[in-house]
Length: 170
Image 1 (cartoon, rainbow, N blue to C red):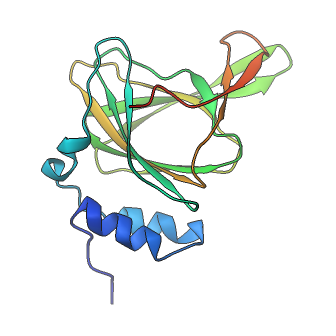
Image 2 (cartoon, helix red, strand yellow; image 1 turned 60 degrees about the horizontal axis):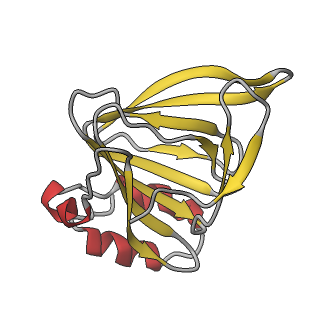
């Protein structure tokens, strides 16, 4: 018998806290029936850059709401050996994927993440960035296992990367 949907952000956090193995997180996140009203208190909009608002953070995971105005994008980055699940809850974002090649970063193509279609980034293997091409706002619910304390930021057209705290954060 299938497990029932999870109908609130509070119930999602409770369910995530019951599990210390992140292999359960995919199934849990897929059961979250996203009521947009439930997340609106975490929406933060900034006309200069996307925003990151923490819903919950403990030793096992971090759950964030990320808001993008039209035209906003993250830096090109990876998660420094963390697993991440990206669950679009409003609008859509494009994820541009990259790999380090002989002459620096090379594009592997792009995919669209649309509302209700979560994506998993496996440990340390996914150099990417998210872009909201607009015309509407976009919001993603991001789950990181373990909490994200740093990431590698890459320069486009280069083989240079630096380790930095993720941001921007509110």
